[in-house]
Amino acid sequence: MGKSYWITLLVSFVMIFTAANGDAGPLDAPGAAKVLVCSACHGFNGNSPGNAVPILAGMAPSYFKKAINDYASGKRPSPEMEPYAKYVVQFGLDEIADYFAVQRRQPPAQAIADAKMPSRGTTLSTQCSACHGARGEGDAFRAVPKLQGQPALYLKSQMALFGGDKRKLDDAEQEKIKKTMFKALNPADFNELAAYYSTLK
Image 1: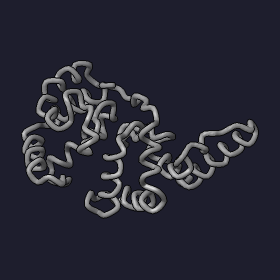
Image 2: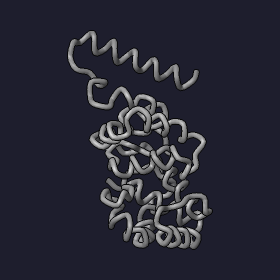
Image 3: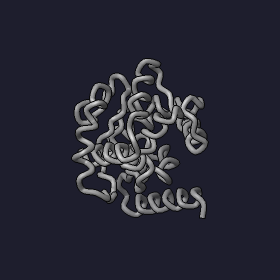
Image 4: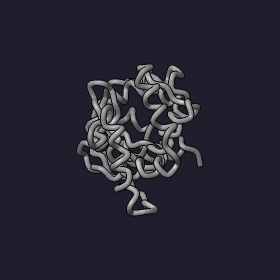
């Protein structure tokens, strides 16, 4: 069954539940109906059920809007995300960004293969703190993403994109620094960094 089937089923269920109770339902929140197209991959309210897809719940609007615009324009290449990003831009980027920003983030359900990995990742994370903060809290003013609590596999994949010259930043100097840093790391380092940030709250 396709994504459209599950989205339609979800919408129908919510509408029936709301009508039956006569009270405001989940779709009555501003932007809620518009974000349903995102739920197939990113989970309801932006809490991704998978380890490879980023959590949107609690994401700063500044970073969400930058990421969506970059996907929609092709500046950040992604065959999967580009059409959805164009939908978001067309149907209300500000409203959708604001909706996800106020959702409560749920920790990702994931298993860490080695319990010592987050501890080792703490040491490696010092080189990330200048941009992402001491504990990966990000910087909404500069549209720097929050790394805390994001799924480990997603974080690892983004590190690999930078290390492989497949992802760019607006600031050429910062991009050079980040790529140089990741090229000096090995796959085990990526795993430990990702494990560390994914366990933070």
